[in-house]
Amino acid sequence: MKFNPANNIQDLKQFGEFGDVNPSITDSSTYTFLHAHDMEETFHGKMEGCFLYSRHWNPTNKYLADALAAMEGTESAWITASGMAAITCALLQVCNSGDHIITSVTTYGGTYAFLKNWLPKFNIEVSFVNICDLESVEKAIRPNTRVIYTETVTNPLLQVSDIPALSVIARKHGIQLMVDNTFTPMIFSPKALGADIVVYSMTKFINGKNDCVAGAICGSQQFINDLSNVNEGTAMLLGPVLDPMRSAGILKNLHTLHIRMQQHSRNASFVAQVLEKHGLKVRYPGLKSHPQHELHTRLMNPEFGYGGMLAIDLENADRAESFMQVLQDKGVGYIAVSLGYFKTLFSLSGKSTSSEVPADVQKAMGLSEGLVRFSLGLDQDIERSGHLIEEALREMGLIQ
Ligand SMILES: *Cc1c(COP(=O)(O)O)cnc(C)c1O
Image 1 (cartoon, rainbow, N blue to C red):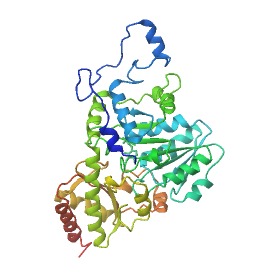
Image 2: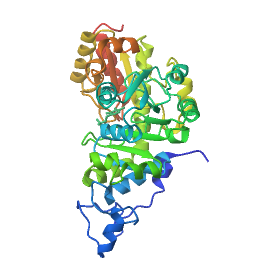
Image 3: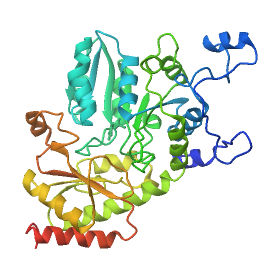
Image 4: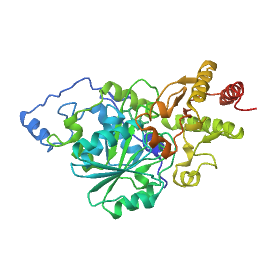
């Protein structure tokens, strides 16, 4: 049977201590042991089912981790206090000083800055490649390469990574394939497609409420054990644990993710078609004009659509800023970074979430200074929103 992330979440049976339909929230940082000896065994990882200290594991985060592992089809998962914590801890767990990483040049700006500016301080080398050019990926491999890193659908250019093909390359050379699936939860199941480690910023679609920052790492039991190992685990020792109150909220929101993704996709697809009809330069993986439309179609779980993100290139930054202003004034949505929210958000990528990427690199990767990134909201009446967007474009003289 085909892998279905929504069914996997629906089939979970997680109850609270009194049969509560929502698992109980652990309001404790530490845990008591009935027998002194049990503490020692737990500390050394020899005893299952006991909790030691909430930076290591706490029951509420465990419920959410189990749900994410079910969604991804990985053996295990770990919850972090941000998407960046998930990305940095996972990479630092795999790589040591002297190692080498291959990454897509188009990634989230924070990830780019970490790879470009921070890792070299610890003698970890990084090669930036066009992830759609599989030959250049394989050519970049060195004896000390440990990871190929990419985003399923990259930020902000919405390039689609060929995960099965990348995993073949990674496997052939004994390298791990790590995928950031933040833009496309449920739409893509990277593990089922061949990825070894899947990371998320849950701040975005998974939580979907823009009320907190959170992240997750999904991978093998061995990898998650290593990450949380009390003596050497990167996550345990750097300590970016999420507060259990927030985990409990995210777990409830995860149960509506499939419906939200469908609506985000429907709305983005509608707006992309409106924009394209007027001859504007729009990037949306669901449009036939998108360079990886076929690839996306072949790899996706089709019931969730082509995602809620689209980008429109207005070529210059002033024009793009005025456009966003008019849209905000008309009530289409908000000028804000972040995504996966119930309201539509738009931002100028080159000046915000990709501003860490130097101007010449932005240009080389095809990121125009007038690129407006949209995260379409859950608008019930998307035709009305489409009309407002057309009105804004008309007022600016960009369409007839
Ligand atoms: C936002 C984002 C991140 C960083 O996540 P935080 O939760 O803000 O730390 C990483 N990757 C992608 C694709 C993102 O959109």
